[in-house]
Image 1 (cartoon, one colour):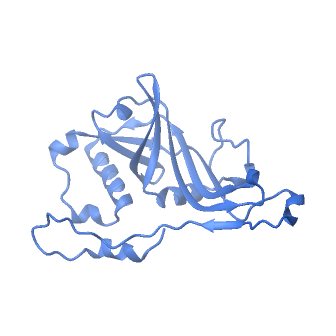
Image 2 (cartoon, rainbow, N blue to C red):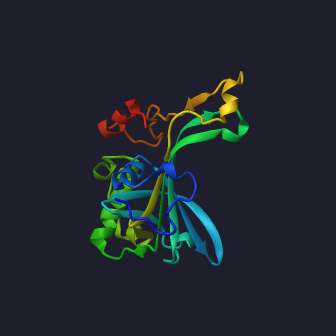
Image 3 (cartoon, rainbow, N blue to C red):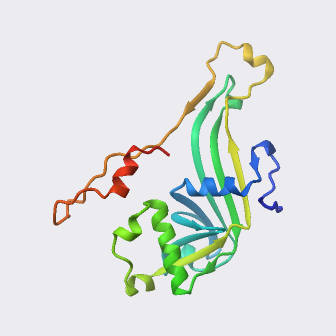
Length: 214
């Protein structure tokens, strides 16, 4: 179960809150990009970036010179999936069906080499399952230029909206179409790098994703 804190307790639309930790994992595991909110040099900034999860730890990475990774103060990480536009009879009640997760905490800079590699593998596999074993591993120089942060999932909230619009009772009689316009994402056909030096087949772990829908 998720443990509520003052920062993760919902005060509006409480019925959308989820308290099962498995719901948190499901939202994170279905995503590709998170948004990392930090305060850098006294100014707020939100950075879209890749991530990966191992159990109750979220891993983020970037250049060692990155402003967003320069400190290890409090951060807020969000992941959101839009599942559809909710069209109501009134403009006021239009909405979006979505799944979202918000994580607060103070990340730690990963310095252990074994954990750094595990975190980078998790990030790579989040984007392209099976790719870590297929591609060249990072060199010492590349690892030295890469910062890896680990953020505990201890303080997190999950919100999910599903279903049709909720209109004012008197508006249900209006001659206005209402419902949900679903939004689904699918993979296209893989496009080979023109710089490939030989005619290589698309690896199965990549080709198999073209028939999947997330």
